[in-house]
Length: 160
Image (cartoon, rainbow, N blue to C red; front, side, top):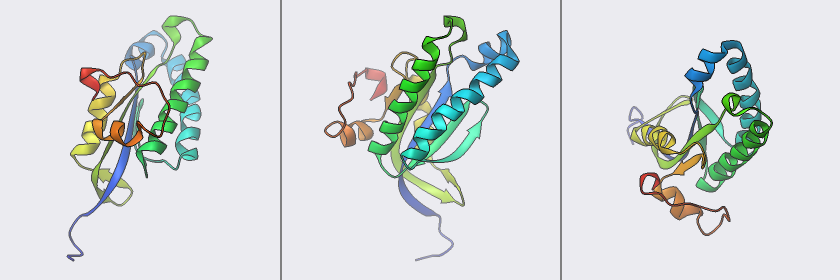
């Protein structure tokens, strides 16, 4: 084996982003940044509890890697539930909703960072997730978790 060749591994990627974060910042920059920090505390716990590790953050976007689709889905659902509960107490215009995308792929490992088309696909899936359902997963994720997780899945042509 060539020791200079890129190291690859199978990974489950969770990409998250806040819906309309720029608009929220435009209305109240300090409030939006404070609210994002509060929600990051909420989202960090399920990611850690399910064995996830952050490998990218930028503004309101985060990417984490998990050992399995089940763990990533469990973390995503927990984040969605906890953020929704917090948002329920707020006026509609101040709610901060996360969209999430989950994909399972081979990635190139570069230190603590991960690269590859599959990472980009997770980000694209996140952008397809509706603010109401919150989580868009690839067909490979769906096939892995459909028989072991009892979450209500809604199949949309753009989300599988």
